[in-house]
Image (cartoon, helix red, strand yellow):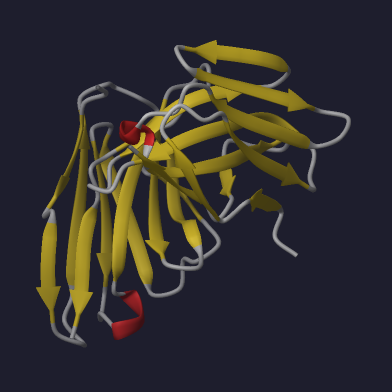
Length: 109
Length: 112
């Protein structure tokens, strides 16, 4: 079993819909990261969080440390949100990240 | 954007040849990482560095070596490339505080 599991693997939405991506992990962590990878390949850090909730524009990330679970929400989705979203956790022990397999999101106009 | 460049951006090489990929940063960050990304596996850590001449192995280090002789450069070497090393390679950096990682643009390596 992978240490970091994402669901769903693929998601298709219509423009304007609310999107939720889930990330579950099995180890103790010091932080969780959400990353975005566009079709061109570049990887961008969206959020780093260790508790509670963060918001940036139409993106919201939440984490529940007790349940070892995080969600990334996209409100009012737009075709430009089409990308792969990757969850990664930093273990309590060090500075290395362990990555989930990614969720491929397609937003249709 | 964090100042990270990777070179080359694309490379095709033959099995058995040595290959060196370069990661260059202008942020003076302490930590540097090399990852590979493959379908079905996500990103996996190859090696990382926590300072000049200080490196350690990641989860998929076999067949790779690294060197960091100065803060801004982290080199990944495939001593004898194999087809299983065909992948997209990403470099990343992070500072000593915050731990947020910034990724380079990636290098697509094909070993024929």
